[in-house]
Figure 1: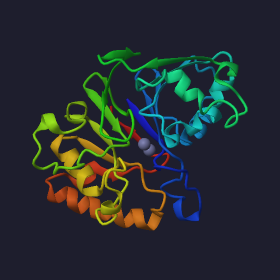
Figure 2: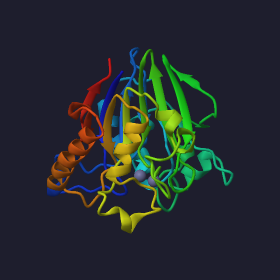
Figure 3: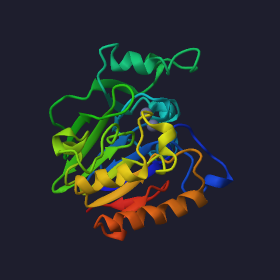
Figure 4: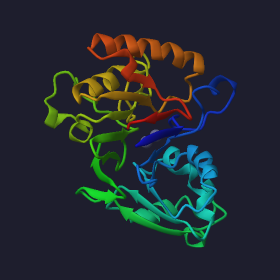
Length: 283
Ligand SMILES: [Zn+2]
Ligand SMILES: [Zn+2]
């Protein structure tokens, strides 16, 4: 299983000289399974560059949307394979009592926000609400679970053989309680993330910034690390960087994160901040 980060930024794209190293594209992570099956987690602006690498025949692409905030779907209309009739795209996402997944996404892919409508996309596209039980894509088993964020939001876990990746890019598990003290059944996302080979997790704020953003749906460093520690992740990729965080800020933040991770008993080489284009081979 190979992982590639195409966008690690949260909230809004933030291109510019201050963000060239970590990247300014919003959430998108590619998972390539052992048989070549491609699963894409979120369709932020990072998916545009991913799409450009799929120039040949890409028979089927599965896109798992955690939720429909713009930073997770904005790249959909700029995903080149969607404009090729030979491509089949399956878009998975959270259920909502309000409207179907397709009609909620169509609010973005329709006038006046978009020049094309969903029904005009040349590819064969279908929309599926993520089931409550495990399902399969190629050789992988998938699970989805609701997590604490604003609006219906899922985290995903993808398992192939004995390797697994858990992706929870927008998550505020410590809202209203200390993650150190909660028992596992009260920790949002615990079962989904427990014992994953790689956890990709929200770490939008520093602890100093967090008091001004309580309830916004994102984690401060303290909670991202405590969550990773409690769920016993083998490796951790801190994700969904705040648009205000420059490369220099994130370099220093990575140093602090590593120190604090080691204080929790973690190994320094098992924790990193997500960087655009970073590839990780999970074996
Ligand atoms: Zn987000
Ligand atoms: Zn969000």
